Length: 152
Image 1 (cartoon, rainbow, N blue to C red):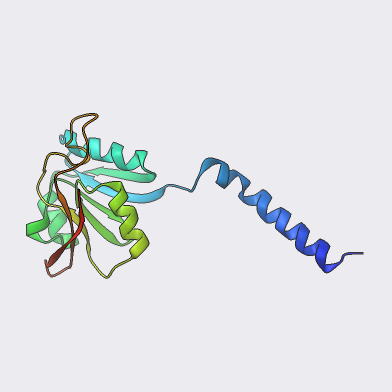
Image 2: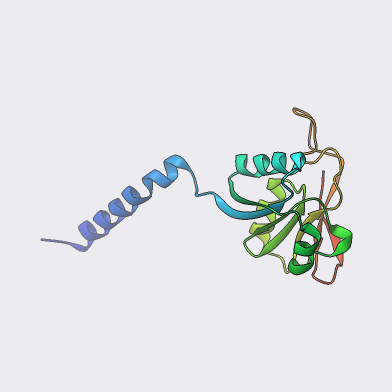
């Protein structure tokens, strides 16, 4: 006879069996679309950084980046060499993956995060083995207003 206790125990067992592989392998990578110039080496290094940190970047080489940034609504003062889209947010430039994760956790009302320009010390710009430090990550709004999201 099937009792409530056996039913609940069996259902819990099936649930655990179905998620066992997910726990063993880890969470599925977070999808991300990245637009960059084909010739930009630092952009490729940033893509390696986010991939190593659990994102699944789909890379599109685009030589008309200013036009793309205009279409996406990236304000001129926060622009950098590459642009990414993740979970409805814009990621402009060499933003550390840890800050992108924090953005996705907090879910603020914002257009996205940016590291304007191409400062040294950022992921993709730092020398191998060097600490990632010496810059600010900005949170920006569609109207171009910014605030500091993180100091590194």
